[in-house]
Length: 174
Image (cartoon, rainbow, N blue to C red):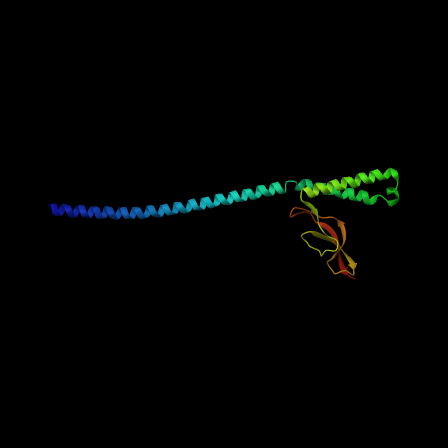
């Protein structure tokens, strides 16, 4: 009887050991899956954090964009006002202080633009660049076709972004 009992115990142990090995394999597989999920979650968290930092940086850098666009028309109007004053009136003592005031306001606005990374787009004499210039018309010229020969409205950038394209006339043969 003891031999028979011993064989049964060995079979139970073998079955139990086999079940434990199967269960151990399943648990190891589950553990590896959980590790992968944790790694993916950590990577996604890092990506979200990096994206938020970039968005925060961009929001800080470009916070004044809408206000800057509005101020461009002020700059345009100051330039138009100065251009509209004829030379004979500029010589008049009563007009000198008005002209000086408009010029000083323009310089102050230019300084504020510079402090905030707002710069005028180079246009005259440049080749048309659709990233910075908007061609409004073609002008018969001896210049190379596509070269800017007239600027109707100045363009501006804020840091590396376009605020407003320069409205230009480009040369064409003829």
